[in-house]
Length: 288
Image (cartoon, rainbow, N blue to C red; front, side, top):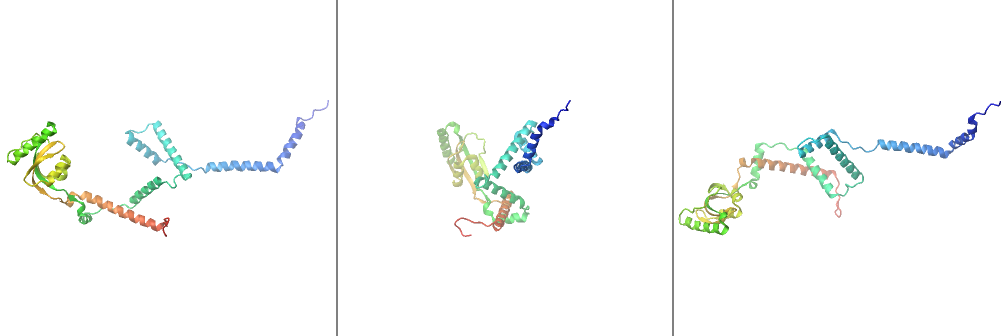
């Protein structure tokens, strides 16, 4: 009996066709193009810009959460915090890539503020000594006034009586006081006599109308009715000292703060001068 032909023989035409196609230049081009495309995608994937949340960033996020809520975040809350921060970074990176930060006045102003703060940190001002502070105070004495002080006594008539009744009682008391009698008055929580009281304190406690009346009242004479937030008063100013310059010892902390602010302002001005020398500034309509 004749031996059967090998099964592969019947596929010989197909194999020969595949070999013929494989030898076509177009096929070579397509294969090479596919390999290049795949390789390019791999390279692009490896070169994607990254968003990194460092350990310092995590610590800051947790610290801010604790400051706001008074407790550490749970695991789920921390995951949500990190997710929100990553979303923020992704949006910021993409906005920067698209140039959305260009020509934005608010962003520019914010960056300028951050640069100004950074320049202050870089140019830390040394603590001034006592002689420096006193010299600074002497040059700027007018900036440290001490308010006028008064010595006075007064009688009070409560607004709980009703405005008209309180005013009438004060008028009657004024008449008695001017005759040399005791003016009387209602009980009052605040002092009825003041020795060397600041007019600023008087205005704070009784209001502008009361302080104005005390400021211009003739010495040694009862005046009234003087209104306040509590009712009406009759007042006798016994002495008055005009505004003066505050002594250095009483305003030393203010002088120090002003000196440091002045030094920081000078450092910022010098930093801006250095930037003007580093950059060429061109303003439309002006000759450089």
